[in-house]
Length: 106
Image 1 (tube, rainbow, N blue to C red):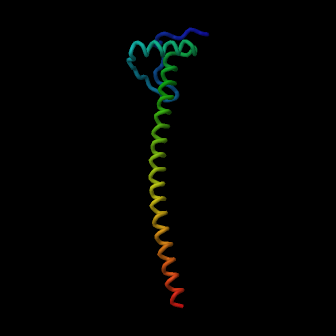
Image 2: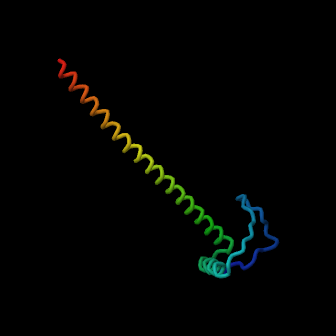
């Protein structure tokens, strides 16, 4: 496994072809050590590992928001359908009464 690059190369171009930009962060020492170990295990640069972790967390957060929105929508739709079911039963009953009244007149 190739050794991970420990520091950014000052001559490296910070403008990437993917449109990325350089952002500096300060991590708590314990978290930084865990991220560094993960980068070492994967044989990746620290930057690559941090980007992958941030992207994974962003996807996870997006999924949680989506699931919450779908759950809320499902609850609202079920409440509407249940309300409509009661209304339909009421209308069918009323039509039944009207029909029986008309049949009694004949």
